[in-house]
Image (cartoon, rainbow, N blue to C red; front, side, top):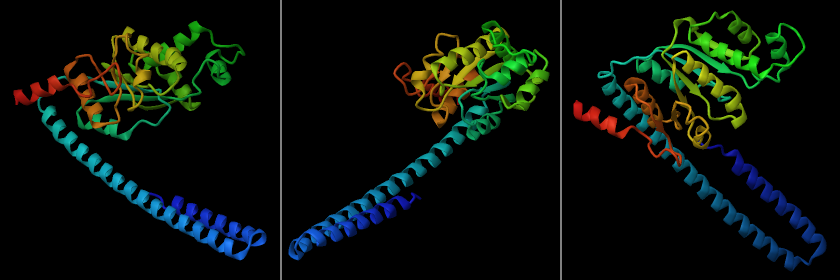
Length: 294
């Protein structure tokens, strides 16, 4: 339920203000005028209290509606997924890059596992993984105190993509992990058919310097790339389009996860999400075909 402390603190502040007002009024004004003003203030406090109570009740009701909506969405998602899984033959192996600056949503990994898609490795890249980081410069340059050139930075990001795709040795990945530039789970050596890049939350400069280099390196290795982001990141996702990738701008919702299922299971490309450039929240035509085919 909603936190009641806000309302308690508000009421306490109002009564403290009333006390101070009474004290000052007694010192400056006559008793009759003070009494009238006190009554006016008390009535105003009473009205404010009733208003806060009503706002609290409305917020609690909205929260209950939201809970019911979320539970219903999850039930529908599980039902639709159970029907679609039976007809899905394409099962690409995934690697996940997380550059969003947030922890990876457990709902997403659970969804992929329940859908039958194997995830070889998950690599969360820390915000400090930049060419300006002095400790990273020393690690890349073998202890020499000099900056990372653009060419060297491209090689480093390419190595990251290639190592997770299973085409390079992983010793340096472990060094990056030990110094907390990346958090790595899974087995990169298993290889991958699709790279899911969870981005869209950073600045455009970071997208240009990291995400797009990861995309290019994966594509060079023959790994298809899908870019996903949380709802509300649609404008940022425009920075990825035109680079041969599919995008999903609401990956934290049931509609977004079902769109991901479509992209993975059909091998088709597309853009989904609630933004101006993408009007589709779901692959409606494909879903209709699945229903009619059943």
